[in-house]
Length: 218
Image 1 (cartoon, rainbow, N blue to C red):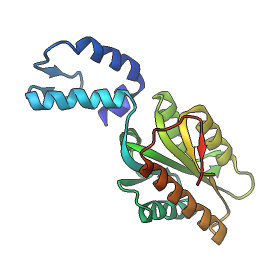
Image 2 (image 1 turned 60 degrees about the vertical axis):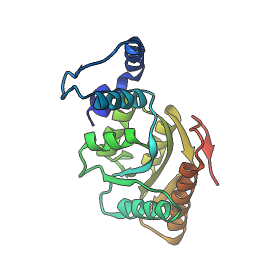
Image 3 (image 1 turned 90 degrees about the vertical axis):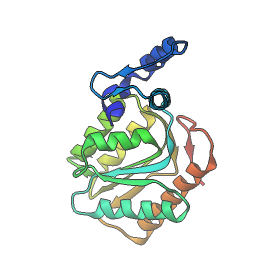
Image 4 (image 1 turned 90 degrees about the horizontal axis):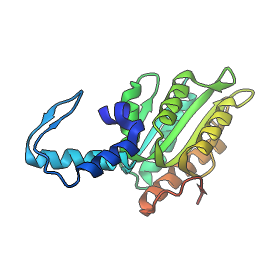
């Protein structure tokens, strides 16, 4: 949580610092804002963790972060999560961004390779808490994610437009087509949501590396 929120933007400088230290014997790590590490077995784990996180390497798992005003977008998120689980995905973390602290959402996004973000349209743009999350991800140069998104609207789908632009600007591999919901759930939307969850699970299980700026749909 500390790394993703405070150090997350500085992956390249962290890598440079680790290279400088690679030939040295480390006996103590005195972090600026955290605990002092002294146990030999722990020192190696801390350095290894910082090395992995600064390379933007993640564990297999899926974060679904969403905003919802009336519950419709939340229902969509639950369908996607259930489909991913049914098709073998594990470590599925769901965050309602109105209830989860942003620092916790960022922690989990840094930890896991899969990311799906959902938002209703609000003032022809994103739901404010989702907009804040996207800004936080951009500011930290998050990369190497299997990514997709879903959105809801009544008239114009401003959320879809904003999420699409976000995806195109990040070093993510987009999985399947986004899911678009007009007003409320119907059978077609539910089928599309299931297909998205299934496609994400399959991509996570493939073991393949993320291919930035590519769209993959099974």
